[in-house]
Length: 254
Image (cartoon, rainbow, N blue to C red; front, side):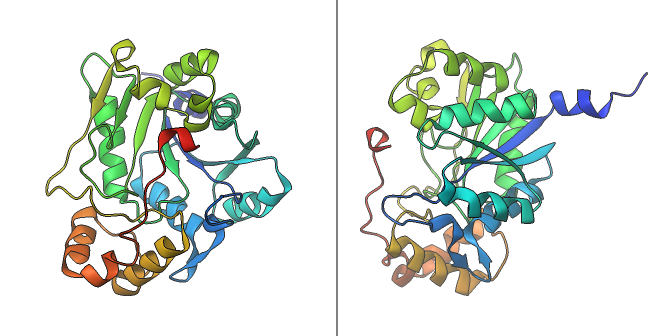
């Protein structure tokens, strides 16, 4: 059997696409903040690289000059960079596919520094192995993991289908047109025990950053397994309390 060319293998593979920008409303520059000796974005890129299931890791940032630092850092971390509109994040993802053709992509966000590489790997492999095929798979359709361990996987065909019709908030949130219209797509979700959806390890406010730094002081500079992370936080209510009052943004907030 003839071996696939590198170009063909990549086109049939899966990309990790990390959306990142400096212009956060509640914590500007959050993805560049230091955390345990490396910037927040570095934690996310490392988790994607350690998952070992991607043909490429791509940081999708904006063309705004404020994001020059994000693009430069992503290149230093060994990721590819694609830049596009700041607010139309869906267009950024479509540009990624234009530059790096693939069969599927995993959407990760740069404000989730404690992503578990094994969890990412599980989601990608489950999506690929689904009998009959899937359009979209997520760990958050019925949330059971802490906020900040989110992984979404979708086919390139699905992304392009959404890109042709999505408007308004759906162009900001990339995949929301799929999971809010699941009757039109082949959708699956992953659920986990013990239930930990009340915990928050995402970065959106100064209090989130304080909580993450306290957590990293305990686990060190490494990507923790999600069960280990949950056990730590259950044993340390003082850490959880640092951002326990923070309200997650609603879909309409952008």
